[in-house]
Figure 1 (cartoon, rainbow, N blue to C red):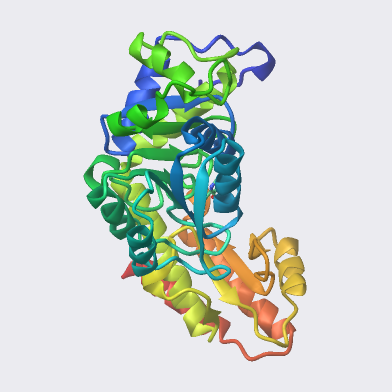
Figure 2 (spheres, protein in one colour; figure 1 turned 180 degrees about the vertical axis):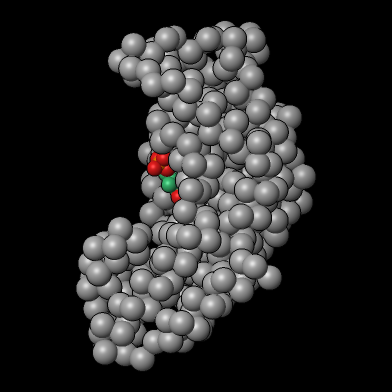
Length: 362
Ligand SMILES: *Cc1c(COP(=O)(O)O)cnc(C)c1O
């Protein structure tokens, strides 16, 4: 796919390559579990998981650290499940001890869902600890790793994650119109019940037959462009290496924090609870976040507000996927510093630049 070609005349995606794509995604997730491809953005894959697990009599513990978790709980309840919801403080991570207490108080729980890393607020949930708590109790875990895959280590089999949902368009730098999920044998047992939804684009039970039958086809009409783009994204991630891709995000996060600290910025999340995808700061009280963002927009620098109730005072510096580079990090930090100066505050932009350069060259 190197020469220019007309997307209106894209060739069909070769059906025998779906299984290869699934294997390649499994390798990134470090798992031999079945990998299902979903021909839609990742929210649809998440809704398919909730819809396929939910039933009257199922008790689920749903952790909410952004609106994605809120939606997941809503889809579970729509399917008749009893949902115990653990909601973190706005923009904050959940503590493993909170989950341990909730699981002890609710021994009937059979499924647990959480988001790994949030790009809405820049937090990282304590995934290994929470999955271990669920594993010890035989609870099926569902992890929304849409934002984190490629930005954080994600050892699906090593941690014992039963269902991991991913999208290529964040840290993997791929297309937004296709997503995937891995399903463990234990998760299949929970999904394949007598009243599992069938003949639905949200039915994972429908997909099981296709996986078992050798995956010559996807449900629905294939959208070839998305699969060619997914393949291109996987080519690049594999050429760089997954560990290297994660390391590039770690570097971007630590360099951003170093630069912002040199500006005297108030970081929203302590380093050990921070995601590698975005870095969030609380805007000083005498600075209007919208004017900072307008200034950044004029320079084509991606500074945005926190997403979620009560988080509009946060400013996010995005260093995900193609933005996890020295150039973008430097531009974001310098731009934020200059925005502070324009608002009449002291900000040592030179020291901040040096801190970013040192983080990258050290
Ligand atoms: C982006 C994101 C999604 C949704 O992905 P879409 O591809 O936009 O549907 C779900 N969960 C998390 C944590 C995300 O960051």
